[in-house]
Length: 612
Ligand SMILES: [Zn+2]
Figure 1 (cartoon, rainbow, N blue to C red):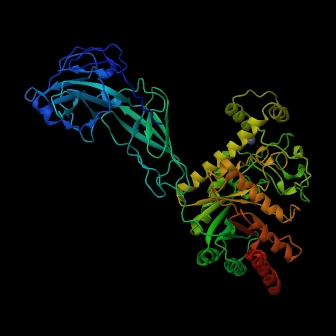
Figure 2: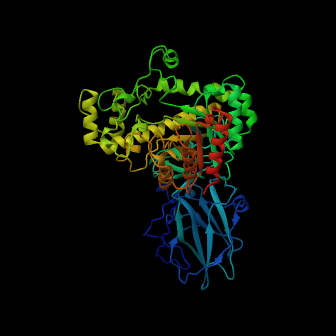
Figure 3: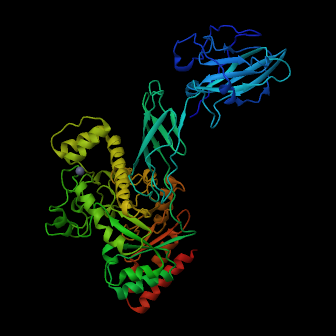
């Protein structure tokens, strides 16, 4: 970002002070207020910084002459004085505002036929004179100085804003910058947390207020810098945006991540057995629904387990589903959620998708612009988060509608239902993509968008999901700043169903891996009628998109197998490179059958975890 312009000027000034014509160096303030009288007094000498020279590589007096003895227009704002008592040493007075524009100057002196270079820049804590100058003592070296000039200068193209530390987990955000002689400044933060949260990207907006001698006129774009951040500003503006990298996560698990995830809720007796089985399998994360956490005795079981706890947080879908007016969600909202609208004009429900489950009523997805619903969902996670010390939160159904459970390799990509084409979403898309959408009905608008702006529509959807994740995590971390995050990812590879992972689901793993600490694709191979190798294929495809940014932990389902060998094979495929571990889903299966069946299942999983 920093650019240093070095100007070499070709003007000789040997032994005398000449007026320059070629003059890219401007004076202080650029004003033609010269000649002016500038004096050097004893107090100025006392304030002088002593500048040590280096032997100059120059062999002639090429450079910009400067004003001498307080007079002249050659370099307005810079004056050289011979010490009247010494005749051989000198003092340079530089108007302080020169250093607003110039980072430094090289003053070259000539003594007989030798040249010396002095680096002139405002020193730390250097005292200003009463008339607003910095003074530099320029000592003679071997003989009397018989000429000086500016041979090089560096223009400042950036100005550092200080006093804002890089956000660290549990740090306190500052509200002001370090005041300078040029400006003061206030800082606001997004997200607006009282304490910096884990795994969060913070953006500081800095509003500078100029002091009387400073102005934002002529400030170029991106003039200001903030250490550790990418800072930007508009031209002629004192409003600076500083984007910091994500705060560091809390302690990570070394080695393989083994996640136990129950589905069916259990009372504390069998639940204790499930948790103990998870421990036996070496689980270091336990992924659990809120209503399971809140059952009697369960917070204690979870806390005593010593396993890191992660809360399952379904976003645009609720177990309760909100599909009737007496559901928990509908009662809390005073209405049903605004269901997403698909391109066919129908609600985003499972029934019209490929291979729906028997009654076709399980999956109903809410419009991502139903903010009231979203806030209600966020609030609904908090009782469980307060009941135990959680390590993380795992966002599920954080996507657009797709009944991926019913897709097969041969499923026609165009049969996957695209959403949401409600008025709010279409209006937001039109504004963000800066396009005009024609049509009256949702079907007409969807047809127009998908025909004319398919790429923009996909980008908008992926951006919407990404921004929604940002919003949810920021809201949750207001109360639980330490919470890490996991994504329940739709198990499509980048190329499955004509790019449906982004086109239909709106999950862009490159974007989302910058928000989440882990990604868990829901690789339910038995449900999806896929070979066990497919589990590894999906995990590897995600890693190919995101690199090593965050761990990828594919899922093995324990509830639909017909042979224990299938479980063993699935676990082996889940932990193969380049996966970081495995999610054992329906872990309650290890405590739901006869003792011998439970033990057989546990041993099959153990054989799988032992690998090939
Ligand atoms: Zn919508």
